[in-house]
Length: 373
Ligand code: SF4
Image (cartoon, rainbow, N blue to C red; front, side, top):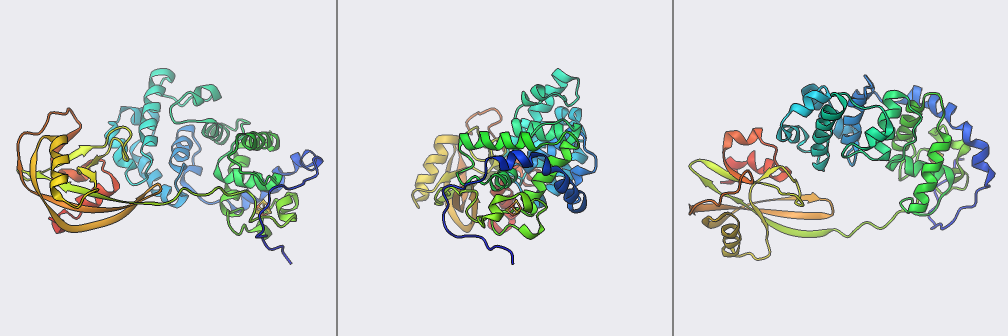
């Protein structure tokens, strides 16, 4: 019978120190055989150029594979190479990214493409220091791109492999601790074979994602079961240690629909705000239910006077640890002159909104304007 996951907390696991040394060369064969048999058919695996792997790796940060697939196909169709991406307006890149979240990634992709045109003749560089020097690329991403696209013998460590390695080594401590990170990177380097390092790295991530899952890993289907002390000790649920999640915070916000001459006022989210670089309707933290307070905040920012009315429309959404209730207010009269502010805000016709890169809730509201106002 297969061992059942333990529920008791674990602080230390004793593994024979020679265990890994003896086994370092034994991971590749079963893992690669399993990968050849079981790997998923994903669009970025069809033609493994450094450019395509880079785009997929950046999209996959903080985002599920199932969500990324369609975004990846659309993005590659519109921006098939470095030169096309570099030549595009960053607002268009953000529009193609809209809905994926963590928009800094899209801005950094665009900036990195510009740098590749300036410094590498429009080609994706293929040396580790050059890739690492690009914006938005750390040790993991550089290793993933160069090993997968160019079979360079570079190790990787991300969320899935971190959990997998912690279980394969038998580390019960929090894997995010610096000392543990060093141990995990060291392990990643030592088990990496000279043959097919790119496939091996992909196989590790695939195994972590599909089999060695955070809860109830499918150990009977795991090609590395015989090499896994966590399985042998029945500690799958205790390893790796899970850190406490930050508490959820509920907040209320007001969004203002301000229109003049059949155009709506939108502002561009600024550095440090959620959705930086994307367009949104003016919004404020709703600390007081009084519309007069909202009107004052709006007048202070934009220089316009309004009478606000609650439309009764509201929605809920989540950003990181915040659960936000968003209430929609309509401006009945708009008086005064809009403060000049370069491209920080502007008036847009309803038909123009579809072409803008907008925040998640801004898009939701823009598509329901007819029923809200
Ligand atoms: Fe993960 Fe289980 Fe495989 Fe060990 S045997 S690596 S715990 S799936």
